[in-house]
Image (spheres, rainbow, N blue to C red):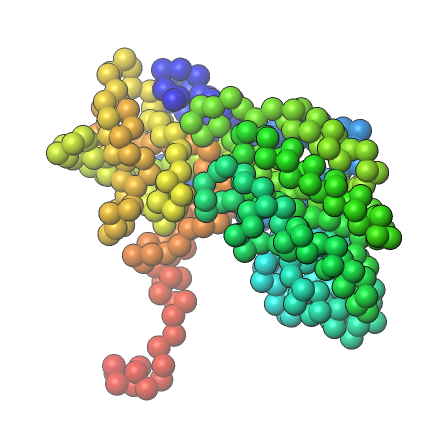
Length: 432
């Protein structure tokens, strides 16, 4: 576990002069300027992760499409667009965010298990490069939409390979009981159906087995099944020219050995590299998680009957992952606290729920009201999953680039929050 007396596990968040920085900006300076809690993102970190990913697949015909669901801030998307990334989206809103950030439509993959007619129509009208179809019903709907537009579109069928990713049950997506994709055993029949429908040209196999994989054995099993399916379909006369392998590479939240991208790329080369398929890769968490931290301020420290309770101003509606997934995030003081002995503490928030915590039984040094904490690896599935529960304001997001920084999503006002609601005329009249 990282300690303020040791180097930070994330190079873009070092301790200098006893305090944590983001690149060349002190987190304490940002806290004073924008208030707490807030998210902070390092441009250098997300750039480094993208370049590492890109380098691992050098020489392959592979396109990197960033999974927008991990973090959809326009500044983050704009930076990935500048780096050459495409986008993997799962809603019309995410598609429009990607387009607004400058990601070309032909580099957008539209995934998702419940795409509506309106969403599919918007994807066709904007010319997205790939639609991953997840059911026979969606095939028929897409065919009708393409036919009414006089279009013939290239599609991928997302196949469920029934491979256990061995991660948290709520983030595995490739087992038979999961809602995603077309059962592997039905693939041949459904491809034949797709080829028979007007307006459709099935050219790709897609799959995604889950998230936060640090053990790559499930990838090898899933990609081997995908390769066998491509050969089977080609044997049936299907012109399969593309393969979408999804994302899922994990990050070391608990100090595990970092994911070996070269080993991951070697698996891809070994299993599907000889098929002659153009590849689509859809990393999300891997690219953005360690680029972000959530900074909060201690309100009070209570003794507690089992251990200290550190009450701070970030809550489950700011970072839902610990409550939703029992997820672990390192929590460290922003200012180094000498050689004081660390003792167990629960780090909890102000929301009126027992599940409102960021860390449980975590060894931390003595803390007092006003101290700042940094929750690490918070760039993925943090701000995007936040809410205004308990009528708490959404927290601001800040992007740092060297010594420059900017608020890339401001904290709304209470007037903004309350103004989202509408009171019917008859109730307003009675109130007056």
